[in-house]
Length: 269
Image 1 (cartoon, rainbow, N blue to C red):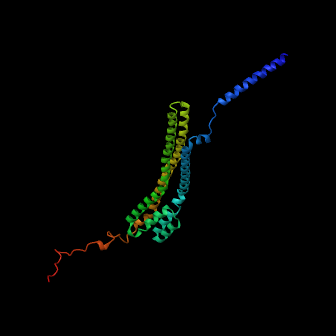
Image 2 (tube, rainbow, N blue to C red):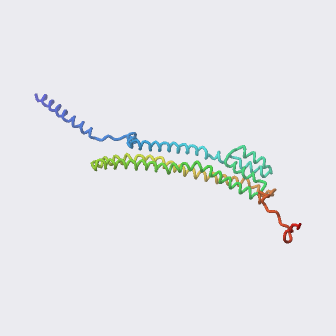
Image 3 (cartoon, rainbow, N blue to C red):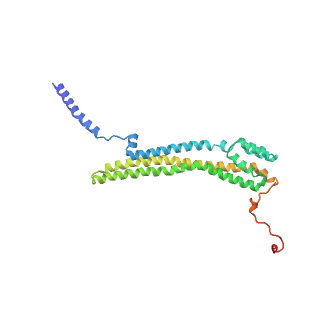
Protein backbone atom coordinates (compact mmCIF):
# COMPACT_ATOMS: atom_id res chain seq x y z
CA UNK A 1 0.00 0.00 0.00
CA UNK A 2 2.86 2.36 0.84
CA UNK A 3 4.59 1.60 -2.48
CA UNK A 4 1.45 2.30 -4.52
CA UNK A 5 0.84 5.55 -2.62
CA UNK A 6 4.40 6.80 -3.18
CA UNK A 7 4.22 5.90 -6.90
CA UNK A 8 0.97 7.86 -7.33
CA UNK A 9 2.42 10.84 -5.53
CA UNK A 10 5.55 10.85 -7.76
CA UNK A 11 3.42 10.62 -10.90
CA UNK A 12 1.29 13.53 -9.70
CA UNK A 13 4.36 15.69 -9.06
CA UNK A 14 5.76 14.98 -12.52
CA UNK A 15 2.42 15.87 -14.11
CA UNK A 16 2.41 19.20 -12.30
CA UNK A 17 5.99 20.04 -13.26
CA UNK A 18 5.60 19.29 -16.99
CA UNK A 19 3.27 22.23 -17.88
CA UNK A 20 5.44 24.54 -15.80
CA UNK A 21 8.52 23.53 -17.78
CA UNK A 22 6.68 23.97 -21.08
CA UNK A 23 5.54 27.45 -20.08
CA UNK A 24 9.08 28.40 -19.07
CA UNK A 25 10.46 27.14 -22.35
CA UNK A 26 7.84 29.03 -24.34
CA UNK A 27 8.68 32.27 -22.50
CA UNK A 28 12.38 31.98 -23.44
CA UNK A 29 13.10 34.33 -26.38
CA UNK A 30 14.34 32.67 -29.53
CA UNK A 31 17.69 33.81 -30.91
CA UNK A 32 17.27 35.32 -34.38
CA UNK A 33 19.40 33.78 -37.10
CA UNK A 34 21.45 35.62 -39.72
CA UNK A 35 18.76 35.26 -42.37
CA UNK A 36 16.11 36.59 -39.98
CA UNK A 37 18.29 39.59 -39.16
CA UNK A 38 18.80 40.34 -42.85
CA UNK A 39 15.07 40.25 -43.52
CA UNK A 40 14.20 42.20 -40.38
CA UNK A 41 14.71 45.56 -42.08
CA UNK A 42 11.63 45.21 -44.25
CA UNK A 43 11.36 45.98 -47.97
CA UNK A 44 13.48 49.13 -47.82
CA UNK A 45 16.19 47.42 -45.80
CA UNK A 46 16.22 44.49 -48.20
CA UNK A 47 16.54 46.80 -51.22
CA UNK A 48 19.46 48.63 -49.60
CA UNK A 49 21.15 45.33 -48.80
CA UNK A 50 20.74 44.30 -52.45
CA UNK A 51 22.45 47.54 -53.51
CA UNK A 52 25.29 46.80 -51.10
CA UNK A 53 25.54 43.27 -52.49
CA UNK A 54 25.84 44.68 -56.03
CA UNK A 55 28.58 47.06 -54.84
CA UNK A 56 30.45 44.16 -53.24
CA UNK A 57 30.29 42.18 -56.52
CA UNK A 58 31.66 45.19 -58.42
CA UNK A 59 34.46 45.63 -55.89
CA UNK A 60 35.39 41.94 -56.11
CA UNK A 61 35.52 42.17 -59.92
CA UNK A 62 37.75 45.27 -59.78
CA UNK A 63 40.12 43.61 -57.32
CA UNK A 64 40.41 40.55 -59.59
CA UNK A 65 40.89 42.75 -62.67
CA UNK A 66 43.65 44.79 -61.05
CA UNK A 67 45.34 41.67 -59.74
CA UNK A 68 45.64 40.43 -63.32
CA UNK A 69 46.52 43.85 -64.79
CA UNK A 70 49.16 45.00 -62.30
CA UNK A 71 51.43 42.01 -62.76
CA UNK A 72 55.04 42.89 -63.32
CA UNK A 73 55.21 40.78 -66.46
CA UNK A 74 52.37 42.83 -67.97
CA UNK A 75 53.92 46.20 -67.10
CA UNK A 76 57.66 45.46 -67.34
CA UNK A 77 58.47 42.52 -69.64
CA UNK A 78 61.91 41.07 -69.06
CA UNK A 79 64.61 42.00 -71.55
CA UNK A 80 62.84 44.81 -73.41
CA UNK A 81 64.88 47.67 -71.94
CA UNK A 82 68.17 45.82 -72.42
CA UNK A 83 67.31 44.99 -76.03
CA UNK A 84 66.41 48.61 -76.78
CA UNK A 85 69.56 49.91 -75.12
CA UNK A 86 71.78 47.51 -77.05
CA UNK A 87 70.09 48.40 -80.34
CA UNK A 88 70.58 52.13 -79.71
CA UNK A 89 74.23 51.57 -78.80
CA UNK A 90 74.66 49.83 -82.16
CA UNK A 91 72.84 52.69 -83.95
CA UNK A 92 69.92 50.48 -84.98
CA UNK A 93 66.76 52.35 -83.92
CA UNK A 94 64.59 50.20 -86.19
CA UNK A 95 65.57 47.13 -84.20
CA UNK A 96 64.69 48.95 -80.96
CA UNK A 97 61.28 49.84 -82.38
CA UNK A 98 60.65 46.23 -83.39
CA UNK A 99 61.60 44.96 -79.92
CA UNK A 100 59.07 47.30 -78.31
CA UNK A 101 56.27 46.32 -80.66
CA UNK A 102 56.99 42.63 -80.12
CA UNK A 103 56.23 42.92 -76.37
CA UNK A 104 53.19 45.21 -75.84
CA UNK A 105 53.29 46.70 -72.34
CA UNK A 106 53.43 50.00 -70.47
CA UNK A 107 57.22 50.06 -70.80
CA UNK A 108 56.99 49.44 -74.55
CA UNK A 109 54.54 52.32 -75.00
CA UNK A 110 56.83 54.68 -73.08
CA UNK A 111 59.90 53.59 -75.06
CA UNK A 112 58.07 53.96 -78.37
CA UNK A 113 57.03 57.48 -77.48
CA UNK A 114 60.67 58.33 -76.80
CA UNK A 115 61.91 56.66 -79.97
CA UNK A 116 59.40 58.64 -82.02
CA UNK A 117 61.29 61.84 -81.06
CA UNK A 118 64.71 60.35 -81.69
CA UNK A 119 65.65 62.69 -84.54
CA UNK A 120 64.97 65.81 -82.47
CA UNK A 121 67.50 65.05 -79.74
CA UNK A 122 67.53 64.05 -76.10
CA UNK A 123 65.51 66.98 -74.80
CA UNK A 124 62.48 66.10 -76.93
CA UNK A 125 62.87 62.40 -76.16
CA UNK A 126 62.92 63.07 -72.43
CA UNK A 127 59.85 65.29 -72.62
CA UNK A 128 57.95 62.70 -74.66
CA UNK A 129 58.83 59.97 -72.15
CA UNK A 130 57.58 62.10 -69.24
CA UNK A 131 54.28 62.79 -71.00
CA UNK A 132 53.81 59.11 -71.80
CA UNK A 133 54.56 58.11 -68.20
CA UNK A 134 51.93 60.53 -66.92
CA UNK A 135 49.40 59.21 -69.43
CA UNK A 136 50.04 55.56 -68.56
CA UNK A 137 49.89 56.27 -64.83
CA UNK A 138 46.52 58.00 -65.24
CA UNK A 139 45.25 55.10 -67.34
CA UNK A 140 46.17 52.55 -64.68
CA UNK A 141 44.71 54.67 -61.88
CA UNK A 142 41.43 55.28 -63.69
CA UNK A 143 39.95 51.85 -62.90
CA UNK A 144 41.40 51.79 -59.38
CA UNK A 145 39.49 54.97 -58.55
CA UNK A 146 36.26 52.98 -58.75
CA UNK A 147 37.34 51.06 -55.63
CA UNK A 148 37.64 54.36 -53.79
CA UNK A 149 34.19 55.38 -55.03
CA UNK A 150 32.66 52.12 -53.79
CA UNK A 151 34.44 52.47 -50.45
CA UNK A 152 32.97 55.95 -49.99
CA UNK A 153 29.46 55.17 -51.25
CA UNK A 154 28.84 51.93 -49.34
CA UNK A 155 28.78 53.49 -45.82
CA UNK A 156 26.48 56.22 -47.08
CA UNK A 157 24.06 53.63 -48.48
CA UNK A 158 24.17 51.74 -45.18
CA UNK A 159 23.57 54.94 -43.25
CA UNK A 160 20.56 55.64 -45.45
CA UNK A 161 19.04 52.33 -44.38
CA UNK A 162 19.77 53.07 -40.74
CA UNK A 163 18.13 56.50 -40.89
CA UNK A 164 15.01 55.20 -42.60
CA UNK A 165 14.77 52.32 -40.13
CA UNK A 166 15.02 54.66 -37.14
CA UNK A 167 12.37 56.90 -38.69
CA UNK A 168 9.99 53.94 -38.83
CA UNK A 169 10.88 52.93 -35.25
CA UNK A 170 10.12 56.36 -33.82
CA UNK A 171 7.01 56.59 -36.00
CA UNK A 172 5.75 53.46 -34.25
CA UNK A 173 6.33 55.12 -30.88
CA UNK A 174 4.49 58.24 -32.01
CA UNK A 175 1.60 56.21 -33.43
CA UNK A 176 1.08 54.33 -30.16
CA UNK A 177 1.41 57.59 -28.20
CA UNK A 178 4.29 56.25 -26.16
CA UNK A 179 2.72 52.86 -25.48
CA UNK A 180 5.59 51.10 -27.27
CA UNK A 181 8.15 49.98 -24.74
CA UNK A 182 11.89 50.21 -24.77
CA UNK A 183 12.06 46.68 -26.15
CA UNK A 184 10.04 47.62 -29.21
CA UNK A 185 12.20 50.68 -29.81
CA UNK A 186 15.42 48.70 -29.38
CA UNK A 187 14.18 46.08 -31.84
CA UNK A 188 13.52 48.72 -34.49
CA UNK A 189 16.94 50.31 -33.98
CA UNK A 190 18.89 47.05 -34.20
CA UNK A 191 17.00 46.13 -37.35
CA UNK A 192 17.99 49.52 -38.85
CA UNK A 193 21.66 49.07 -37.92
CA UNK A 194 21.91 45.95 -40.09
CA UNK A 195 22.36 48.10 -43.21
CA UNK A 196 25.15 50.10 -41.55
CA UNK A 197 27.01 46.87 -40.82
CA UNK A 198 26.55 45.81 -44.45
CA UNK A 199 27.91 49.13 -45.71
CA UNK A 200 31.01 48.86 -43.53
CA UNK A 201 31.59 45.25 -44.58
CA UNK A 202 31.71 46.41 -48.21
CA UNK A 203 33.63 49.67 -47.63
CA UNK A 204 36.53 48.47 -45.48
CA UNK A 205 37.91 45.84 -47.93
CA UNK A 206 37.31 48.19 -50.89
CA UNK A 207 39.36 51.01 -49.37
CA UNK A 208 42.09 48.59 -48.33
CA UNK A 209 42.27 47.17 -51.88
CA UNK A 210 42.35 50.72 -53.29
CA UNK A 211 45.33 51.67 -51.14
CA UNK A 212 47.22 48.50 -52.07
CA UNK A 213 46.56 48.90 -55.82
CA UNK A 214 47.49 52.60 -55.76
CA UNK A 215 50.83 51.86 -54.11
CA UNK A 216 51.39 49.06 -56.60
CA UNK A 217 50.81 51.43 -59.53
CA UNK A 218 53.20 54.02 -58.08
CA UNK A 219 55.89 51.38 -57.62
CA UNK A 220 55.51 49.98 -61.14
CA UNK A 221 55.50 53.42 -62.79
CA UNK A 222 58.70 54.30 -60.92
CA UNK A 223 60.33 51.13 -62.26
CA UNK A 224 59.11 51.92 -65.78
CA UNK A 225 60.65 55.40 -65.54
CA UNK A 226 63.97 53.98 -64.39
CA UNK A 227 64.14 51.33 -67.11
CA UNK A 228 63.08 53.81 -69.81
CA UNK A 229 65.81 56.24 -68.70
CA UNK A 230 68.34 53.41 -68.71
CA UNK A 231 67.31 52.15 -72.16
CA UNK A 232 67.27 55.55 -73.87
CA UNK A 233 70.50 56.89 -72.34
CA UNK A 234 72.56 56.22 -75.53
CA UNK A 235 70.53 58.93 -77.28
CA UNK A 236 72.32 61.54 -75.13
CA UNK A 237 75.61 60.85 -76.91
CA UNK A 238 74.13 61.02 -80.39
CA UNK A 239 74.29 64.25 -82.39
CA UNK A 240 70.96 65.87 -83.10
CA UNK A 241 70.06 65.44 -86.75
CA UNK A 242 67.19 67.91 -86.81
CA UNK A 243 65.67 70.58 -84.63
CA UNK A 244 61.97 71.01 -84.15
CA UNK A 245 60.81 74.27 -85.78
CA UNK A 246 59.71 76.91 -83.34
CA UNK A 247 56.69 77.86 -85.44
CA UNK A 248 54.98 74.82 -87.01
CA UNK A 249 52.90 77.10 -89.30
CA UNK A 250 55.33 79.12 -91.46
CA UNK A 251 52.48 80.78 -93.39
CA UNK A 252 51.34 82.53 -90.22
CA UNK A 253 54.73 84.19 -89.60
CA UNK A 254 55.04 87.84 -90.79
CA UNK A 255 57.20 88.65 -93.78
CA UNK A 256 60.64 90.06 -92.93
CA UNK A 257 61.05 93.82 -93.21
CA UNK A 258 63.81 95.17 -95.44
CA UNK A 259 66.96 96.47 -93.78
CA UNK A 260 67.86 100.09 -93.56
CA UNK A 261 64.95 102.36 -92.80
CA UNK A 262 61.35 102.54 -93.84
CA UNK A 263 59.85 100.33 -96.56
CA UNK A 264 59.71 101.95 -100.04
CA UNK A 265 56.59 103.86 -100.95
CA UNK A 266 54.59 102.77 -103.99
CA UNK A 267 55.13 104.90 -107.09
CA UNK A 268 52.69 107.71 -107.72
CA UNK A 269 50.55 107.58 -110.83
